[in-house]
Structures are given as C-alpha cells and as structure tokens.
Amino acid sequence: MRLRWFAGTLYTPPVPQGVIVVSDAHLGFAPESVTRAFHCFLEAVPSLGDHLVVNGDLFEFWFEYRAVIPRAAFSTLEALAAVRRTGVRITVTGGNHDRWGGEFWRRDLGAEFHEEVVDLDLAGFKALVSHGDGVGDEPGGARLMHAVTRHPLTARVFRWIHPDVGLALVRRMSPFMAGKTRDQAVIQRFAEQQADYARRLLARRPDLDLVVLGHTHRSALIPVGERRWYLNPGAWMDGYCYAMITPEGPTLERFETAGTTK
Image (cartoon, rainbow, N blue to C red):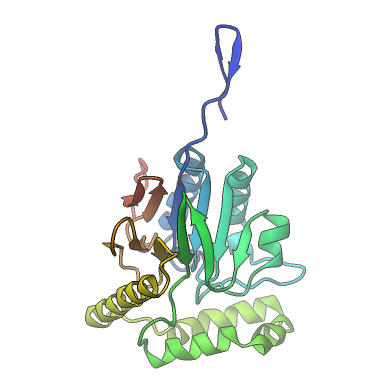
C-alpha cells in the first residue's frame, strides 16, 4: 500500500469497496500463460476491491493432505497469501475439481472455505454463492464425479494413497470423470438450466438479491426483477473473465495485462 504525505499529514489511499468474483481457472490444466495472467490478476486485486471470491475450480485438481500440498499449486497459493496480507478478504468455494479442502485454506491462508453453497453479503447484496455443478442435466461422467467427490468416505480413502500415486491417478481419470464436452449445444443447454435454477431460487427466496454460479464457462448477467440478478463470471481460463460487484450492482469484466497472451 502506498503512503502519501499531504500538508504534513500521513495519508493512506482509501481501499476500493467492491467484490471480485472469479471461477474456473483450472490451473494445472490450462496453459501456463493462463497461470501467469492469473498471478498478475491477483497482484491487481487489492486495487480492484476488498473481497475476492474464488467460486470453484481454481485448480484442475486439489486435495488437502494433512502434511503436504500439491507442488504445482505452490506459486498460486503464495500469490493468494500475498493478497490476503494486504487485508483483502478471500472466500473460496469448492468446485467439482477442488472440493476437498478446508483447514489449509482457513488456517494457513486465512481464507474462508465452503465446500458447497454459502450465503454471503457481497457489497451490500444478499447473495447465494455456489460453483453450480449438479444444478442441471449433466453427462453421466460428471454426475458420477459429483457423487464420488461428495461422499464422506472418498476423501478418507484417497488420503491413504501416496500423493505421487494419487495425483497421477487423478490426472489420468479426470478427463473421463469430469464429463468434459466440446458440444456447444450441451454446454448451452446446461447454461440455460443454470439460469432457470437461479430464477426459481430468487422467486423462492425474496431475501436474496444475487445468485452467483460458475462451472459452465459461460458468462451471464441476467436481471431478475428490481436490483436482483443471476451472475456467472465465466471461466478465467477462457479469456481472463471475472466479475465485479459494487453497491451499484454486478458487472462482467475481462482482465488485460501487457505481454500476456493465451
């Protein structure tokens, strides 16, 4: 934080009030340029707002062991720790690729971690935040992965596998279990199902102002009544997408950094 002197008085520039929402970076699967751009983005976060929400699938895979962390995630975790040291609040929600977390995020990084759905106050708006997997009619492989990652025995069993073996196994299985598809019609149908889910939820819960989802890699900002919205920031890995929420409302954004290309 820069300090300036005015007329003999120490002046600290005001902290911008706003919430930054980002999801689906899939670091570890996306090209290295995406990771570099994300680290540049994290450096800029304190100048953008005072609360960072990472809404699932930050990593292609994350598992919280008791004594080790995945080596490939180290530089990103350090960049997040640097953001936290500036005083920016960090909230992380689990995605279908990185739901197995908790104590490390809270104790070592000082972030809030939620495996599933959470209600948050975001810039004065009451918001329901969830990664969004499992909302619509997904392929069978994705449904299987949801069931496996949510079962309480899965993490206990996986923890007994040596990290080198476990992570290698996940790398081989992930493309099949995640139900990845390039079929744009399938993706569009699921994105529409998410929007319908958000509309129904807002109708059922008049206390909510915002429903924030990710997962589809499709940006969306849909008004649902007066100062109420469905928001999906899109995927960071697809064009450095993110969203801002200020007291004026949410907006969709793209991060630009010189010298970083996909």
